[in-house]
Structure formats: C-alpha cells, structure tokens
Length: 337
Image (cartoon, rainbow, N blue to C red; front, side, top):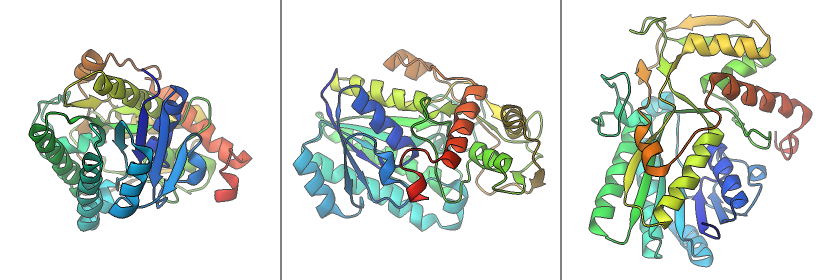
C-alpha cells in the first residue's frame, strides 16, 4: 500500500507529527491541518501544513476539497485529564463537538476511511488486571467522557453508512521520542510524568511531584501502560492499510500489556539520566484511575501490529536524548522556543 492521500488533523502535535512523518516515509501524501495552539509548524517535517481550526468548517472544507483525501486521521483534541476536571466544557467543545464537525465535513466530501485518536480513559476504573476492548466504557473524567462520546458518534455514523469505516485507537500512556531524534514532546507546561521527570533531572523544575501514594497498588502509586510514540505511530500506519484493504470498523487498544508504577518510572528516569532529583508526595489528582494496562491481543491479531520499542528504558532513553537535543537546538526548535 502506497500513494494514499491522508489528511491529518492535529498533525503538528506530539503524536500527529510522528504519524505524519511515518506516513510520508511510507510513500503516502500528507496534508496536516492544525491551529498550532499546542502544535508546532516546525514539527511538520514532510507534507503541507494548513493552519486552521477544526471548528472553522469553511476552512476545513476548503482544505478537504483541495486535497481530496482517501482517509482522515483525527488527532486534534484537548488531552489533559486534570484540566478536563476543572474546565469540562472546553473538552466537550473541542473533543466531541470539534470531532463531530470534522467527521461531518469529511463524510460530506466523500471520505470513507477515518482513524480516530481515542484513549484508555474511556474505561474509567477497570476491575480487571488487563483491559480488553469489550470491557465497559465508564470514564471518570470529562476527558475520557468526551472521547467516549466521540466513539459513540463514530459507531452510530458507521452503522448508518455502509461505505464508511473507521478504526478507533485507544491509547494508553504515550511517551518517548522519535528514535532518530527528529521529533518529541515540546509543551510549555508539560504534565506527562516522564517528560516532567526528565525536565526535573535537567534542572528546569526544582522537584517532581507525585500525585497519590496510597492507591491499591504494590507501591501505592498509579500504574500505567507506557507505549513508545514510534510504536503508536506504526499502529496508525497499519490501521490505514487495514481500512484501505476493506477492513470493517473496529476499536483497538494501543499498549504493551504491562504496566509500571509512578515510582518505577521515576527510578528508571534517575537511572537513565544519572541524576538523583528531589521527589515529593502530593495528594491524588481528581480523575486519575489507579491502574490502566492494556490487553493488546486484538490489535496484534487484527492488524498484525508488532511493537519494536517496547521497553521502559528505551522510552525514557529516547525522551532524554530529545530533551538534551533541545539544549543544542534541535532542527527548527531553537527559533520557536
């Protein structure tokens, strides 16, 4: 499969930019549509960038009509759990209403294949060690609820249109950086544990705060399934091939099937960086489930996806190398900081 035209909303962001890069390298044509509110123009290494908002239907429609994509990959969304609890309306407007706008325009313009960026937060407080796609969707925060609602819209829409198919990829905790050092996280105020810990090791923060140490887990801290951003990007490439090849609509977990606690992650960060930074315990954040670990058999069986960077050490190592490259002025980054 090559030469497919893919429109990527939010393609200047952390995950979207990595997917866009791999799409281009696989021989596909890419158009990135991003309002650059959290993304960066320099991160669009291949393909054309159209600066526009997903709520601006006229601009988005113009981009779709001019490009005539075979598929849309939708990443544009608000993603911080804590913020969603404090400002839920923002998340329903951006993640559900904005998504619905993209879907409506795309389908009106004849797009038949859709890949949706979803989240493990749709599961809420799972009772099982490993979460499977058939488990109940019961989110405990507005972020997860907004994504669950979008998944329901996708499901209903596909049921009403036999020509339309989608893959909804439920991400677990995405981390790491491009293995060739070209792309990585660059947020003004990072909230992701690994990035925050690495920046603390660099001295950008004087301490790392751990939110909750009395959960019902072996060491009292939350457990998460961390997936390398490059492996996640590869999952999108094989999902595209699945749809173009006539695959039916499906929701799939994106994770490795094993979890690490906050304390285990911190210990590995200290090992990789060689820095023994200060860590302090804080009260739990609202909306944080104690454990989220994927049952990933379905994505491996359905798509033939096989991760290549599935160790916590490599995830942290690539993220650390990216952080160090920012000091040296990674391509396009220095002038935008």
